[in-house]
Image 1 (tube, helix red, strand yellow):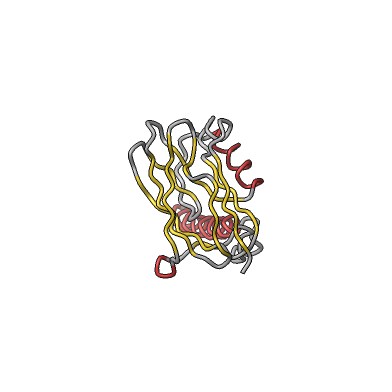
Image 2 (image 1 turned 90 degrees about the vertical axis):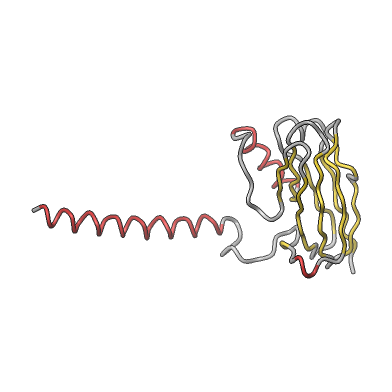
Length: 163
């Protein structure tokens, strides 16, 4: 009897692991219809294809400097972000809806870490980068979504000119 329980337990564990793996893959695909289509704000950039570098200061007074950025459709931009403030800040690119949704999550989990190519959190005095390709003309918003920072006006916009 012990042998059959052990075999059943191993089989159950394998089935459970496969099911969880499939659920994770489906969840990771999220709203992206399979997880592989282009975002409305562009695509993660490739360092070798960077066409321009833009430095952005996460400054005291809950501001990005500059907060109004202009790029051309198709450009791959390296954002070099410097947190010169005394508190932690985040740079998050997204649609207005995506930013608001993420802000609500940040309110519940203020210490969450980010591993998305369009986001970075930086401690005071630290520097990092986001590389992004702007594939569509229009506007792409960015914001600091740490609790209170967005409400204080720490946001900006990338205006993407058509080719």
